[in-house]
Length: 171
Image 1 (tube, rainbow, N blue to C red):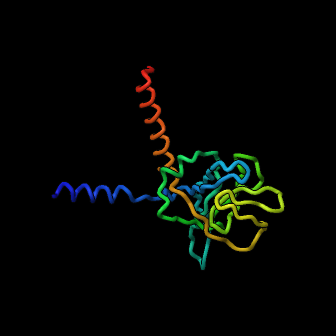
Image 2: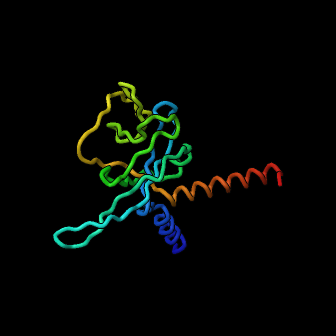
Image 3: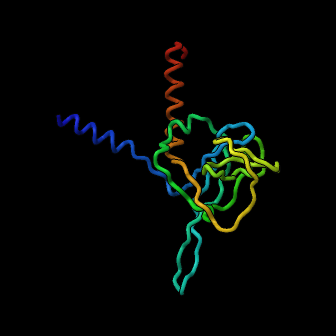
């Protein structure tokens, strides 16, 4: 009975997923190829002053946009939604899959995708079509697990390749 209780506690605590606050990773899909990609931002602390107090404001500077695979989404926890405000993000990449100029467009379904200079864009997540423009003020964007999940995916892929290699009898 005590062993089952310990297993349940362990299982419950290991399922919790956290984000690495040193980075923001946004998951997106290419409008043209439907392939997934990730946008990575690194934390930057900016000195600022308010009423004579020296403070630091938090923002995230673009590191780059990177092609990904569907495996990333399968290994990440999608139940918890972490958000970041677009005002905290500095820069936006072009789409690493098709080269569209804007890699950070947000659909009404709250998912991110790329857009080009076409008049009507189609969201690769939900299929909605619409015209995109610019607005004032920030908006919340869903962020993904980031660095730790990418490490776990990489480790999982290496383990699978190792097992397949040993099953096939290759050295």
